[in-house]
Length: 157
Image (cartoon, rainbow, N blue to C red):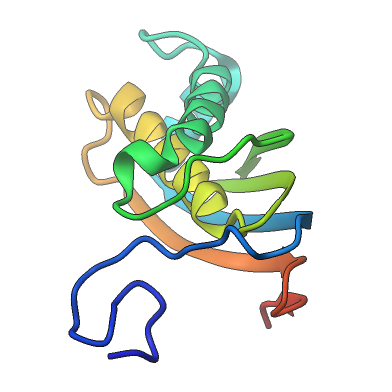
């Protein structure tokens, strides 16, 4: 079990000690999508959803979620994030693509914060539109970029 950083030699869950690691600039980007009926996308783009501006609310939800990641994911460190961006882009005919980028200068990475931002933004789109389209699908949530720290840079294919 010692190959996994969140388990000790006896297999017990532990929070990784990052105290001796140098602070470096770290960035992570995650992406995902919400697939929906074309009519639902039209409603979002036209701004006629009964609950309000779907894209603006989902963007804010994603930013807030990145900041709350250690409250949601066990063993994540509380971090002083320096930047969180969440972009929601309508992609006709039937999807909203979501991209979140998180940055900080610190001793641990921000991959989980970027993934959480995308996930909660997608869930917010679903919540705001479920009355008209319960068949929406949240899909393709993944890490696409990570930089900083000992392991260096990762770029998804």
